[in-house]
Length: 141
Image 1 (tube, rainbow, N blue to C red):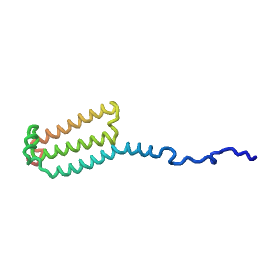
Image 2 (cartoon, helix red, strand yellow):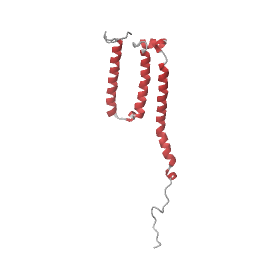
Image 3 (cartoon, rainbow, N blue to C red):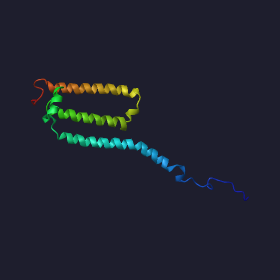
Image 4 (cartoon, helix red, strand yellow):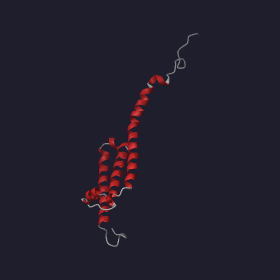
């Protein structure tokens, strides 16, 4: 009865290093790196947005001239520039953190309709602001 059959306890256990420890960390870092870059870009553009809020674009000639072509005047120039930066940040969040860059047309089609209607609502707001109904607005512009 000195026969000893090998059991799982007799075999040396696989160590953590024996299955390619470096391969796992390399692939994780490879997948995390774009998220860190996008996160840094979002932070940078947040700082840019705050910095832009201190600039009065309605006092800078080239901006007044350029935005006058599309009928935007005064402090509204600052709002349009701020909304452009915010739109870029939203696109970054949607593409990377919500994984929309990998989606099929079944997701993009309703999303395009959403963009269309949001643009329409922004235009309605802009038209109402530019030409208000008399007596419905308290301030003069």
